[in-house]
Image 1 (cartoon, rainbow, N blue to C red):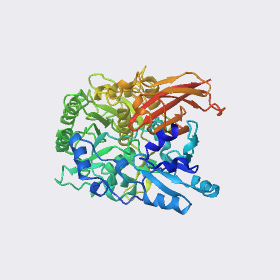
Image 2: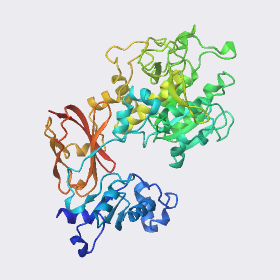
Image 3: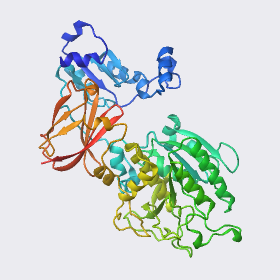
Image 4: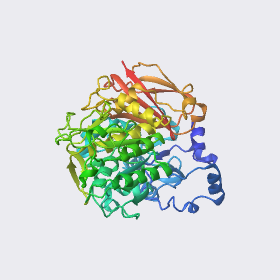
Amino acid sequence: MRLITLLIIFFAISGNLFAQENLFAVFFKDKTGTSFSLDQPEAFLSEKSLQRRQKQGIELDDKDLPVSFFYLDELKANGAEIIYTSKWLNGALIEVNDDASQDKIKQLPFLRNPSFPLGTLTLNEIQEINEDLNYGNSFTQNEMLGIDLMHQLGYDGEGITIAILDGGFNNTDEIPAFDSLFQKGKIRGTYDFIDHEENVYDDHKHGMQVFSAMAALAPGELIGPAYNANYYLFRTENAGVEARVEEFFWTVAAEYADSVGVDILSSSLGYNLFDQENDNYTQEDLDGEKAMITQAADIAAGRGMLVVVSAGNEGNDPWKSIIFPADGDSVLAVGAVNQTGNLTAFSSLGPSADDRIKPELVAMGQGTIVLSPTGSISSNNGTSFAAPIVAGLAAGVWQAFPHLTNMELMELLKNSGSQASNPDNKLGYGIPSFKSIIENTPLSSKTFDHLDNEIKFYPNPNAGIFHFDLPENWVGKELNWVLISRDGREIQKASIIPHAASFQVDISGNSKLKGPYLLKVQQQKISKVFKIYFE
C-alpha cells in the first residue's frame, strides 16, 4: 500500500511498472535551467487553469514551473530513464538498472536528497547537512541578532513589503547582489520625490548601502536578513543640502508607501540642524510632536506600518541626542554597537524630551558590511546601517508571526532585547534576538491556529525516537523536517512522504544529540516549530 500511495503522486502509472525493482524518486534543489517563465504561463498552463487561478486570487509561483530540462538531461546522461516528472515536488520518477549508474546519480550536485528506491522509502532517510548560508564577513552582524537561525527556519522576509526612504540608490540596478530581487520582481516600485522621476539609481550611494545591509544576496560576502522581501525604493533626501523641505518629501513618500500596502517603513535619515540656521530644531523639540517628519512617522505607524529609523550619529557632537524622527512615540529608533556588542561613541543617546527610553534597540553599526557602488564589499559606520538590519529582522519575525499588529511586533522585538528587563538611554532594550523570540513565543498565527490541536509531537524529552500525529490532509504529500541547534546550525533533515497520519522518526544513532534543539516541520507553506530535548 505504501508503494501505491507514493506512485499516485506521480500520476497514474501502468501496472507493469509496479513490478520494477529499480524505480527511484529524486528531487532537485531548484529549477535552474528550466526553459519556462512565470511571465509566460500560457506556455505550460491552459487558459482554463489560468482563469481558475484568477477567479480565486491564486498567484503563480515556482511550483508551477516545469522541472529543469538540464537536470533531466544530466540524469539521462548518467543512465536514468525518465518515467514522470513532478513540477509541484520538483522531482522525477526514474528507472536506473545498474549499480554503477545509481551510484553516479546519487552524487549529482543538484539533487536535494539521495534518490530513494520506491519500494524501500522509509521515514529514516536522513541527510547530514553541510550546506549553510555563507555569510562571509557579514556573519557577525547577522549572528548577533540570531538572523542565521531565522534563515535556517525559513524566514527571509518573503511576503513582507518594505519601503526604504533614503538619499539615492546608486547603481543598485547594476549590482549582482541585487539580481535575484530584480529577477523575481521583488523591486515593486521606485520614485525620486526630489527630481520627480522613477529613476533612483543615478543618485547618492547611501540608500544603496543601507539597502545592501538589509537585502543583498552575495553568498560568501554579504547576506542581508530580508533578502527575499518585496521592496519600494524612494529618494527623499538631497545629499547636497540640508533643508526642512526634505521632511515634506519624506512625508509624501511615507503616504505613498501606505497607499501601496507597505508593511515596514525603514529610513536611515534624520534631521536636527539645517543649512538655514533659523530652521534648526532644539533639544526641547524632541518630544515626539514638534518636527514634521516625526509627526509623519507616527501617522505612518498609526496606519499599521512598522516604522524603523536610525537614532542618529550625534554621540560625539555637542547635540549628542537622538535626532528626528527617532523621537516619535510609535517609532522604533535603532542605535549602533560594535562587533562585540558595546555601544559606539557616535551613536545618539536618549531620552526623548518627554523622558521616554530612546533608542529602543541597537544593532551592529560599526564596521557593518555593506556594498560599494561597484558591487564590491566594504564596511561602514553609522546607525544608518544598524537600522536596516533591525528592519530586516522585523520582516522575518513578521513573516513568522503574521497575525501581529505593528505595535505588537515592536513590543516583541523590544522584549527580546539583551537588556529588556533593565532598559536605558544608551542601548535601549538592547540587542534584539530572534532566538529569544522563537524560544519564548508560540509559533502560530490565525492562519495556522487550527493546526495547533492537529499536529502532535511526542515524547519530549526523548532519546532520539519521537512521533508525529499529522492532519489527515498532510498524508501523501511531501513533508520536510529539519533539526536545528540553538546556534542556528542545521544538524539533520529529511524530505519524506508520510503514508499515515502517525509516524515515527528514529535518529537515535546520532550520539551527539544532547540538550535542546529546534525542530521545524513544513508542508508546502505551512510550518510549525517545536522545541525538542534529547536526553
